[in-house]
Image 1: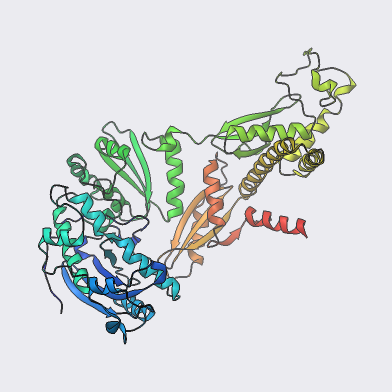
Image 2 (image 1 turned 90 degrees about the vertical axis):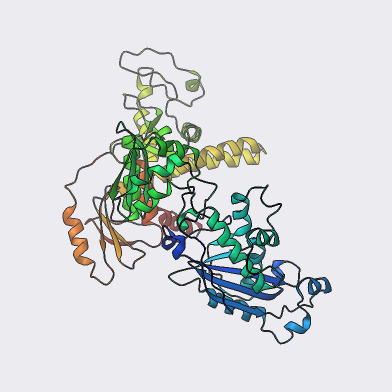
Length: 577
């Protein structure tokens, strides 16, 4: 028999158990419109992997109203221990004709209906226990677990109730504190009913703390400061669309750049207790306005976020504190070139030979040592001119350098050395790798394993630099790529990429022919202007193109392209055969 009671749900933050997440449909949903399924299990003891469930009880509530209840015994497949029977009152006799655990769990999941458009939040008191048994049963009986968001009333009670109010967070203690209509009895449905009342009591306690929707459930960690709550007006008028948002202070200085699939709802979250990062608290207190830039897709939003952070250097973005300057290995532009390290956030110019970017300078230096070990390119730091007069160093005596610093016939072959290094820097790494592999084998035969490992590390750093620069270079060499990916609504997000740089996007609604949208996008692309391109932007586009969901629509005439990851795998397979 259902019971009905309506607590105050005008404002209600909560706390999800670790490792759960809300879906996009949950974001911004008022708690008064949210559906909760409160569940309680009785078991025959043992571990969750045994799936020894004896009873399942559940209550479905929405807006404080009980809209459904569920209860069933289960045949656990094992005898019920005497002490469990004393505790719960459930004996082997009660479950003799009960459905199997598999059938009972399927019936419960059908009752909860987690796959619906209004996916409920699963609630339990000490959720790891109940959810653990349910998940183990699903795994044991080959039932798909729907992965609902999970709310643990134990965790919520710890954050809301003071120690001087309740001596512990047991269900019986909380039920007594909130004077629930039903007391817990170690029977599934009674305990689920008591937990539902406790949930509503906890929600009422935090109704004035600033979190009013499900978005605050996942990271609720105490009340938001009054100063933050007063800033909620900054989200007024912002679009509920994907894009980029920028917080500014009173002097029009950018504080923070972010991206979201729903700008308004994401900005609203900064003014609630859901935002627990201390630096964001400081940022919000300084903020005086928020600007929004609507984008056609999440990819466009991510690209524009990268560009804005690089351009504006907002105070509270980590990337602003550590500018995206990557390390490259390149040849110097002089009469007798040598290897050098260069740091920059953009890709090197098309006419500048380089490999990278490297994760750090140490890896770049290992790659330099690899090239030095495999070639006779000069290693000195001096700039050699026609007037230079320098005595050759010890590398000349070791026949590791032809000493271009000397005049005469001895320098004739230096351009051939530079040519070989240039080939390696544009992707032809076979000669360097073969020489290093030969050296590794020699050390292994001599049982000099540490020396072999040192050369191996240098070779790997060099190969990684060649690979990363090759995949970037291939994409940036193509004047135009049109690619599309299906969005969550069933339509197509269509993107244009010119020379490795995002050039535009358009969305084709579900059910409509995307070809006119492709033509419209092509017509909107400006003339070929080779602007400096951020390394992070090209790599983001490469990852998007190669994620297995993106379809190549068209490519510039005379060009072919295969994602470098797949191409490299294919090359490895051919080499092995």
